[in-house]
Length: 175
Image (cartoon, rainbow, N blue to C red; front, side, top):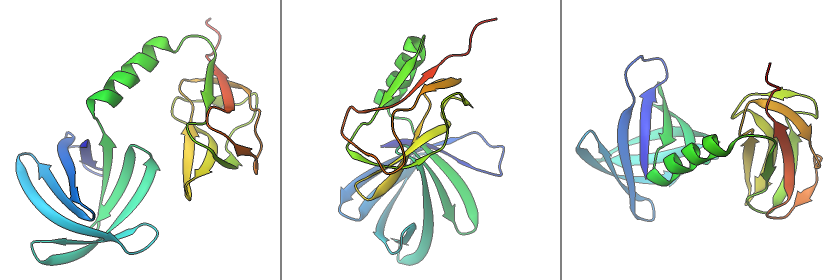
């Protein structure tokens, strides 16, 4: 998987990182052409114990979405975002196709644990609307466009199947 990473408090340009899982818990990380091999084991809900070149340290991982993470490493906060070619193409395609109402469906079965918006609320692209628990993980489902939530056929506590409608967002009316 290829990521772009930048330090949250720095104004530097993002750096490219390639992360390859070699075996369970063993990874090869390439940053700007330099390769490191690490062992990583989850030791808490968001904590990983990492060993690199015989040195052990802890890393805190805050999953923002399926493709974005904030990483706290040795007192420094970094943001990682997946930038594989497939995701890049999908993002471009969804931007081009995002005209008119956008219906968002569950990508997997799960339980609605929280509604972060209501019908009539104005939301920004990427803003969380529904939190869905699937496979013991909470996933915040964001709006695909800037707009207004016009339909929200689910409620907290509902169980949904793959393909179930979660919400509809309509773009703002043109002036």
